[in-house]
Image (cartoon, rainbow, N blue to C red; front, top):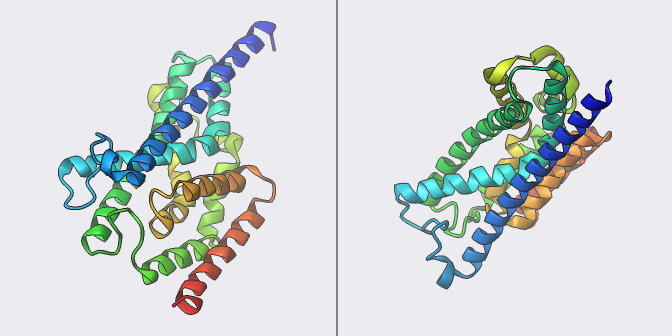
Length: 260
């Protein structure tokens, strides 16, 4: 490898890493602002980023969708960063016509598009749960059966073959690119979308837990982000998944039996 290429790869890696860190940081700042607004309703209700607590309008639906979309960026971009950095390096080495950083941006856009679909589904679910009073205006579950069911589903899913099949794709970035590589701008977007689909299929049950523990409970948002990161990046990922699954199942049992 020439010194020139080594320097270019190092520059690309630095730019992409700083960009990803910036995106995640801005997302967390947005969530912290929303959390502050909810804790100080007398002031926060006038904030343009705050949806109404009841009787949603189309604007409120848009704000809730934005909240979910930003939350997914904050939670999932850190775990996806190794894959995105590897894409940037491979794309540069292949010498594609598309600008390396633009292609990386398109890959990230495709990845986030998959999570935007989850955000839309979560927004509609939140609207429905709020309408039937299973979710409080403060975005917290008001139903023990709902909370227990979500925890039980998440716990059981942690032991499913589907979970481990999708997790294997997320943990094998080189294998993914060897079989799924597509050149050009559309190819970068499609690869990002497909990787995002695997990630979504792996983590949807964990994200749905936010309805049980509080959609804007930032402590749990951070905890679930760390859990996803451990599942994807640590050698003991199966133990992490199984221990998490047992914990969710035990929590569901405690809600139904011990706290019923």
